[in-house]
Structures are given as C-alpha cells and as structure tokens.
Image (tube, rainbow, N blue to C red; front, top):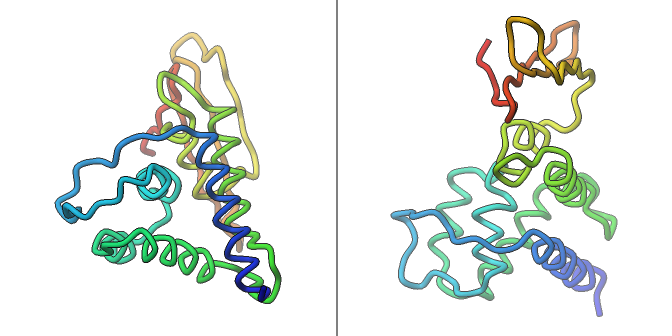
Length: 173
C-alpha cells in the first residue's frame, strides 16, 4: 500500500473516530443541497460541524454539488491535503490541531450549547489559544462575568476580544 493511500485511510479513520465522539446533527437548510445529499452521518456532520468555521464558500458549494459519497470522501481528503503544512509526512498537523481544538472547546466552553457552537469555542477553533486571558468569573459591581482574550498579531499589534455574560457572548469593541 502506498504511503499516500495509507495516509488517506488513516486520515479518514481518524476523522471518523473524532466525528463519532461529537454526535451527529442535521445539516442546516441550504439551497445548494440537492436530493443527492448523502445519508452518511459522518459526511453530513463533517460539513455542518467539523469544518463549518474554516471551509471557504467556494469549497462548501463544490462539496454540495457532489453526488456520490466516494466523491465526498475524496473531497475531504483533498481539503485536508491542501492545508497540510508538511505534505511530505504522514501526519497532517493542521487537521490534527483543528480536531484537538474542537475537543478542547467542547470540554472547556459548553453552555446551553456544545462548546464548539459558543463564541469562545468558535474563536478558539479558528484562532487557537489566546496569548493572554484576563478572567473575571464573578464580574464586578457593574457588570456580569467576563473574559478578555488577547491575541498578539505581530509587530506590536494585538486583537482584543471580550466575552461577556453567563454564556460569554462576544462583545463588539
């Protein structure tokens, strides 16, 4: 078996195992979905949950136009290969880190929704761990609980995000 084929099988197995650990939900109503939409729970969940924050609009449209599950699995393999920072190795560090962030968000940021659906979870999945967190879990006399996340963007600039309230919603600054 070739190294790429072994990698592809490992990738699909790892992705499938991670997907099963999160449960399955239906895809949101999307006019691009045709009657040929897959009945495979993994494929439905992959688009609706696993990559919802990182897939480009053009990629989503292309995936939705596919009519066979074999094509969809090939698309997923190519999706991760395009993002692999070290394609000469078997591991795909970006894919592995992405799924690690989803697991972390689900464990660390659940509210009335799963952690990956929260503002903090979405931010963590897309941007990774902040460089600094200022936590105020009890708030203060004039405000509810809040957290301030700082990301250093380089060259002295930074992004500052404030999550407010019992569910830590992102507050626009």
